[in-house]
Structures are given as C-alpha cells and as structure tokens.
Image (cartoon, rainbow, N blue to C red; front, side, top):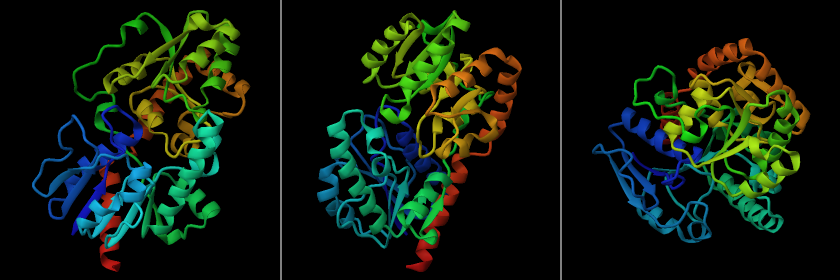
Length: 374
C-alpha cells in the first residue's frame, strides 16, 4: 500500500499535537517496513522523522488548518495516488482523493465551545465558524475517524451523529524519556526555579486552559503557604492579563512565568514540583497529564472530558468551573505529603498503560481494515 500521512501539525516549537505527529510516525516506521509511506510536512529545520527506505517526505508550505490548504491543498495530495491518506489533524483539503481517507479527531472545542478557543470575541466567532465548518467537512468526507480518547469518540457519536463503526479510539502514548529511571542526560531545572517550592502549570493561555481560575484558586490558598510559587510555562500571549490579575489578588510576587520550555526542562519541572496543576475546562486528550504522571509528579486535574478518563483515580480531580474546588484540591496536595507520594506511584503505574507502540499498532490496524474493505 501507499500511505500518505499528513503531519503538518508538527512544528519546530514543541506542542502536544506536534508530539503526537512526530512520535506516532516514528513508531509506525519501527513496525512497518513493507508499505510505502509519504509524510507531508511543513518546511522544517529538523531532519526527517523516519529515515528508512520505505519512508519519504514532501514539504508543503501551508498549515493543515489554513484556508489555503483547505481550498487548494488537495492537488499535491491527489497526485500521490495514495491508497490511504491520513490527516493527523481534523481538517482535510477540499477534494482530497485516496483509496481511503482517515482523520485523527482531537476535540470539538471549535465546534461546541468556540468562545473557549480564543479570548477575543470577534476572532472566536470567525475562527469558530471556519473551524466548525472545517471539522464537520472532514468528518463527512472521511472514510474512518481515529478519536484520541473515548470522551472525544462519545461526543462524535452522541452529539454529532458519527456512526459508531466509522470511529475508533486510539489513545496517545508516553515516550520512554518521560518515565523515571530512563537513562538520559539530566536537564537542569531552569535557574529561576532552583531553591523554590512550586506548583507547575503548563499550556497555552487560551480560555479553555482555565488559567485565570487556577490563579484565583492559588490566591485563595496562598496565605497558608507563604513560600510557595505558582509557575506558568508555555507560550506567553496571556501573560499580561494574568499578571494584572495577580496584582489585583495580591500574589504578583508569587507568580513566575517560565516561558516556552524544552522537553528536558519540562521533565525537570515535573520532577521538582510539589504537583502539576492542569484544570482545563475541556481537552481532547490531555497529554501533559500523562507525561507528568510518568515523571512521578502528582497531578491535579479536571473531573470532566478526557481528563477524568485519562487520570481517573490516579489524580486529585476538581471541578474546573469553581475556583473553590480547585483551591480545595490544591490544599489537599499541599498539606498531605503521603497523598502526594501515593499519587506519584499510582500515576506512574497508570502512565505505563499508554505507549506509543500501542498507538502505532492500533493505527496500523485501522489502515489494514480499510485496505480489506475498499
């Protein structure tokens, strides 16, 4: 078979979507040396994802979710005459053709909750309309859908009418380097965090990440732990708003913005933090939760969407809509070192159930099934 995997969600800067694209392709390459693979990428300063003989890469300039790709991106894809075309993001070029078309469906945030996807109302309205249209088109024009969580699969079937036999759940995995005990050069903790007791938070500043409510919760428990710092890591578009809010809450000197960190620095933060706080309002999967667990870091996360599914009883679950609930969960973890130790161990066992090899094997099973029915 000739299989085209569209991995344009992979960027030079680290993101969860990019990690999914890169690591999934790497593991498919380890498992399949027979079928021909063409990997579509954006221009990159990094080398090929897979270098074996049955893999080659082509470069296309436009992002997979861009208007240019949706309107005109099919020409190059169609010329490949692929037996299977798999978009690792939930958008498709208009008129894309292959023996079978597959999309990876991550979430319905743009469809069901556009206001949570962008804090600027006009952008949320415009991008929400376009994003919703793009996702619905991709669902309608695909032959099979890979959902990254059971939560996403259920929303697709229950709320959006996707036939249950058209969609398969394939979980993300955790790479070995996130697991404690993995032999690798140790990355030092960012200098500004050495000698600090801190709670670690990671992610962009879009509304669904719920950072203002996390900050409010931190302010509610700050007096009980005067030496504690709340660390925000990730792209810093919302830094100014959060700092203004921190000043109004009287905790500006207790907040640290770490910026964009390397994977090694993130691992170091997981290993030194008191716990990882990830109270998103909605997630399609929540890979940082698993990576924190694998690193032996206790986790506080939300009791909804895929986060409750992935973390289960191996984390402190809170109501992300209520700062009081988040604050209570934080207080539990701060005052109970035995609980932190228990969650660190249980989280590692939980994370061990998620491997990228299993993700790749199950993705290949989808390809094989499609090859037998077309």
